Image (cartoon, rainbow, N blue to C red; front, top):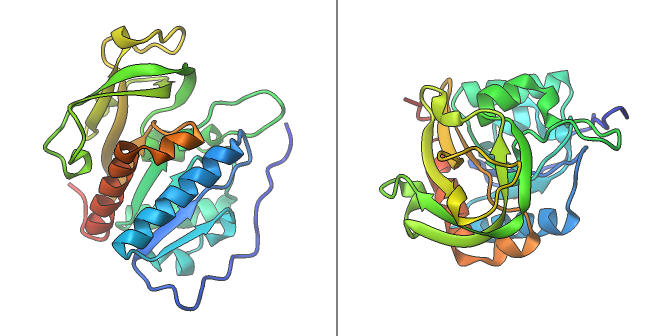
Length: 256
């Protein structure tokens, strides 16, 4: 297995960047879909710009330091993969979360399993997978249409989404059902009778989107968003915007 490429020099944040916004982090030391990373970064920036939220995009893991993290309320791990942070950077981000920061994990950031080709995995960091995300992604189906059921239509995160949402996706399956973890709030599931999951099956209860507390911080993960063109879907972007708004609002407020 190749050694991961860790960044040691922090990026320079724009002088005009106001505090309290969104850090969009999309470093990949494992699997990378360039089209998807670029499209999702663009969608997230467009949402932030429209809403007037300060945003900074980087693939530099050295941004995970106490001083620079303090300038943000929300860190989006956008389709990140592989072992991307060194020991000090991991500790800084963990502290950011536990003291009240917010995290949004998008699709490939769900703890990619150890894969061939000599790549590292986000699963190498057990706190990230077990505590922050809340479940370990292990296998996915091919891209095909299926039915998403919005389990909590009253949540601000699901505002504007249909309770039965039919769309195509690469459907993720996880090593264990996050519903079994106390404190996890499931927002959406996929109906396995509406497609052919193959080995990527979780049975009758197949969560896709959820949130939970990490000490004083809020963590949300969405398994949606494999292909670049998915980030031009209005409902996908509605989910991302709702999530970002909710997580920004709750940052620093404590978590119950």
